[in-house]
Length: 84
Image (cartoon, rainbow, N blue to C red; front, side):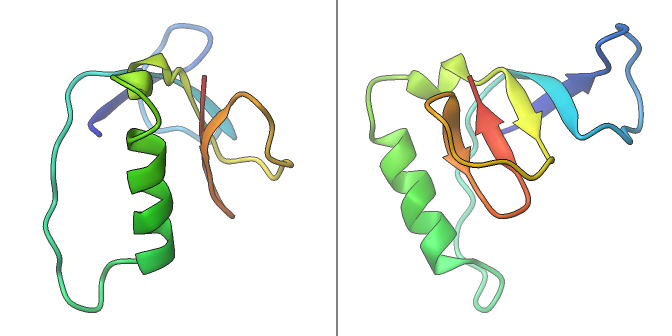
């Protein structure tokens, strides 16, 4: 996914925050690069994307803070979370 991010104040630029507003612009398929992909994360991403027609369009935030998975987590990882 190509993500555009901005601070809550509305300014856009390099982020130091742990939570960013995001908007899905388009989908991109990236093909295997031996040794660079995380098989478990790839499987989880595939399941999240197969969860329903265009559900990924509901993604609104990229979170980088440590938190427990919640209903708003579209794809939750150890160092990131795409949430709705």
